[in-house]
Length: 226
Image (tube, helix red, strand yellow):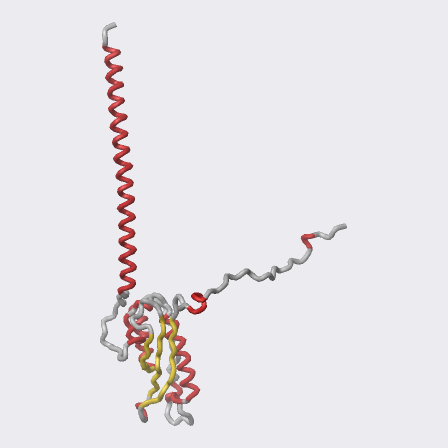
């Protein structure tokens, strides 16, 4: 009696797929699209109750929506708060939360440095880095002027006029070229349609004329004396 083939356990196919050989262009060429933002080098500035921590925010990208492909600015926690509020007010995206304000660390008479403890500064730096990368990676947020100002301008103008960032000239050229091609295609289609309509009308008139001649012949035959 032969064993039932259906009862045999399935064996997974572990053969490797034949991968395409990688040439020098693929290996050393620039990546198609990338956006990297680092929040680093935290420094405590000021004295007494006027102390606060600043961070360097560096962005590297090849996305055409950004004017600068490599930029570095200095920001503090309140600047991140400003960006979050602007995006919540003007954009239609769900803005991720910021690292907490750590109110307990702001209480007086603490035995440690509070907000300026090294471990807390590193924890906040990491949270701010995650926040800004999530925001900048969102396609809708990339159109907001407040994000571009935050990432690429040395000073933030709190009195700026909210709005969308205009597309760069390269994107406008591509869009114009696409529109011209679209218009050209539409005109070609209209020309073909008009040619078919003209041919159809000509055929209809010719057929109509033949029918008139036939009708005249029939009338003459029926009315002629026998």
